[in-house]
Image (cartoon, rainbow, N blue to C red):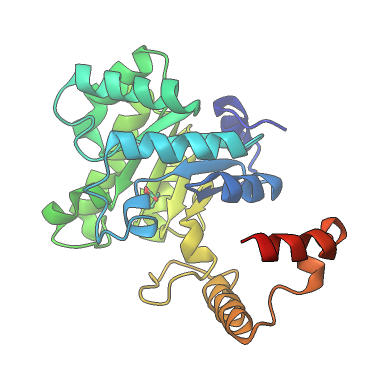
Length: 281
Ligand code: KIV
């Protein structure tokens, strides 16, 4: 079944959880889609997972579009959401609408996501008015890492909790169809999920959200250097891939790969003319 903003909303209304993953390329998108994941986020986390930066800040519109297009080609049924990169929507409303439009038009994705609560509601309203669904993202918003002074849990204590709840209500009122809650205390996420009609999707926000999102590389166990507390590893692909690469290298060096089974032996050259070629050159 094709996932849409309408089916995601219906899932919340029917109490069915939404499963979302980040994804940045065609072949992984095909696998994610085949697994029945409801929504794919082409997150600007690709700056870290695919490009090796330490934050999401350097990612550009052009880069998002290249990765996004590849994902959309691989996603049949999953609903694809494109992250708006840092400084692609903050400067002005025309800038926000123009860049949201580019992300949809040039990738074929179904929606955009932008970070921030009440402060970005003018952008959300303007993009929604242009006919583009917007997923909001509140709590710990990685594009504000310098303002937060690091990647920290948001919503601790009454004042912060009130601020996160008010952000959630504000983005819903502005027309967002869904909201990501990142690194928010679980009881607060559950309260927000109860207060909102639109689905909440949590990352590090506990089980009370209407859905969950994880970074694909994190849940596949592809990076041992940094594993956030909220990540559950569903595979150890990093180890498996390194082992496969090492075995390949050893077999190439030992002359064990390729074997006849991996060569076009049935179409092989005739020894007579090979001898002739050998003589001629
Ligand atoms: O960019 C991203 O991957 C995200 C998720 C962490 C929600 O925004």
